[in-house]
Image 1 (cartoon, one colour):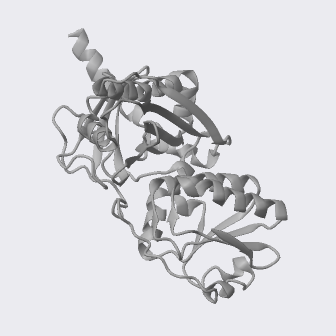
Image 2 (cartoon, rainbow, N blue to C red):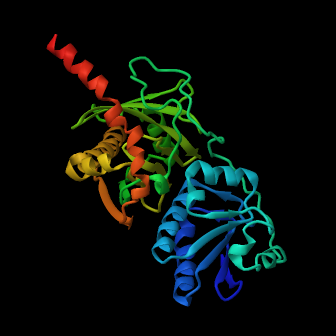
Image 3 (cartoon, one colour):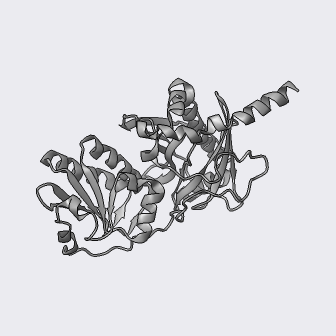
Length: 355
């Protein structure tokens, strides 16, 4: 990864072949140097990219928050059609202006964009392996037995930039240390028993195809505020990880990633959410009790995995707030609020209990 000045106000950061979690530190160093230089435009050159995974997309989300606080404009150059679709699906295009060619958005860059085209850059594959197909709206074509199946059909997926509350990155993990356990076994255990590892308050209903990019998982959750019927979509999946993205109306806007990484003396199993509350109602709920309730869910999942593997469940957690602002322009998300729209289910449940 390297950077070079384009003009007095803009800098170009040419990305490496792979954009993933390992790229984040280097990318942020280049950006911080740019901020210190006083330039107010950053162009990310995607032409060399062979592959971007969901962790790489998360790095871009946090980068957007960083430059926003410094009033710096962020651009993406050299995106192929499929990567432009991924930007739209994840909501990255809400914070990064996509430059399709040298004839678009030129005025934003004072006519200097043509210099990019003349740079000697070896084009990468821009593989979309693992990513969900381009889906404008979710369609619930099957409802598993027992699922309420509400607040999903016809909804759009929304990323962190389309949410309301402060953005939180919460990371939960365990280190599996047991002779004879291999990474592939841990991955298989998560995929095969993911539903069983959920607490009794959280019921997941995947489709018949199971965990696969673009597939839906319906969720009925018993929260302190009553039943919430919603769901998630599988945004990304590879041999070591899978990422779930939320739809409109979900308590959170963003995604959560489950990953397994083999280290020298252990196998690192991690759950990382990069999300913000989706509307003012849910922000208030998270401040009262929802945040702690959510944290117990993912700690329970990792503890259940550890018990299944026969290892000690030393679940650790850390959290970080990349963006503390409230996005009042997204307050209208409350129209889709799944807690409010699940109210008839709660009334029906109370009626049945009274009977």
